[in-house]
Length: 296
Image (tube, rainbow, N blue to C red; front, side, top):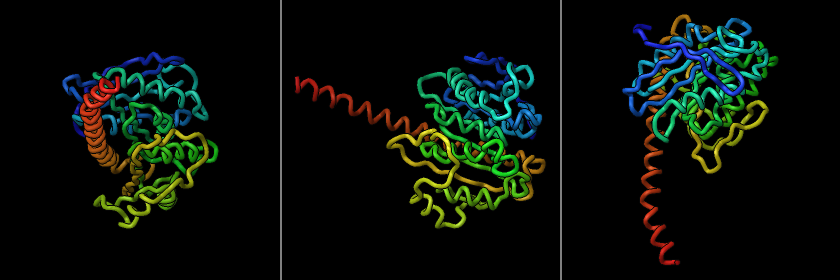
């Protein structure tokens, strides 16, 4: 992808770890959100320098929707402290702390953080969905086959499916070596999700009605990251890119650009909804004060 993105190396001082990261910040973007990008499986060489992580980082940094973009090395990678986690236990716990670190660098009370994971990183990113600042999720090449039974990736996918209070987007190459397009389509449909055609219309149209009526699904086991009580159900979307595999050597930049364009729409909608809620609360406040005074 063309374009140079200015970034600085940072060390995230978390409660139980020090994690090395690369940070882009644009303070002039007053109302921008934060994006946290998680890399593939560390024991197999995954790091924040993975080329698809870089594509996602660049695309987010070039979007005015983001004031801050962070990619970081998980435990035992690069200068990050600790040891590489075969099952990701400590890395999962770190995600919430990293999201909190990113949110704390945003100005104002209304924080918005998008979590973006590639490959195994999409499984780890699922464990950030309970953070109140998280406004959207993108999972690129979620691994449901291959070593899925060892790494329990279907359990982590279940966290994504159950986070119905958030908009969620899944991207997959149709030649992916670890998850077949058919398997992912089935998993998304079974959990009330929608499939997108190449023109981004629903495939087929009746999927929209099925998703609206869907309850539960067949996601893997594990604790729920919490569809918030009373919250409006948000979409789970799948977009398949023809001609690409798990490693995105053909259309990696196109997938990253698609993800960021989708996030721009979701973040704007969330901000507008939050603003509407605040206006309604402010409008109701004088009425409440009058009622309290009359009651006294």
